[in-house]
Amino acid sequence: MRPIVLVLNGPNLNLLGLREPHIYGHDTLAGIKAMVEAWGAGFGLDVEFHQSNHEGELIDLIHGARGRAAGIVINAGAYTHTSIAIMDALLGAEVPTIEVHLSNVFKREAFRHHSYIALAAKGVICGLGVQGYLLALEAIKGLVSLEPPPRN
Image (cartoon, rainbow, N blue to C red; front, side):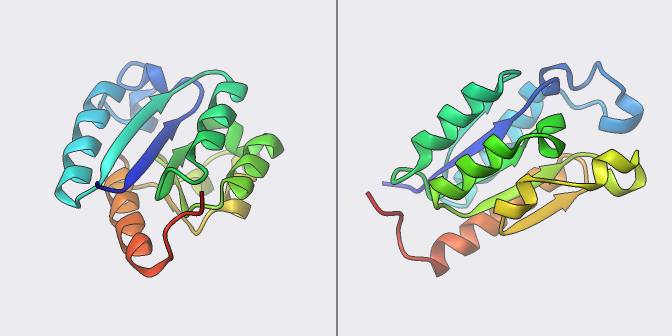
């Protein structure tokens, strides 16, 4: 059985390719999903890819990772800067988490410079576009081989 990695995407990421392509690029979420799943398979990982505009749904997915998933890659979108609840869920999941952002949040508005998600993450990748997701999977693969398996 291959390790499972949840790849979670927050609000408005369903509009990738349409919304502000000068910031987020021209790749669609469906295209990113296909790349991430193929890359994950190459690393021997099963990827479960989700997007939600609803904070509670993302929290439920994170709760479901505890004892089942080897890691989480999350682009929480705007919830990055506002959601203590998602941060708490990630801490409670007790699986390695990598935070990803397509844009370089530090070259943008000041409110985007703070991340609650980062407080629960092993690392943060921002500004590398779609490549950030692929690098996050590679990081999770490395962390899975270094950490004991998740508890039940």
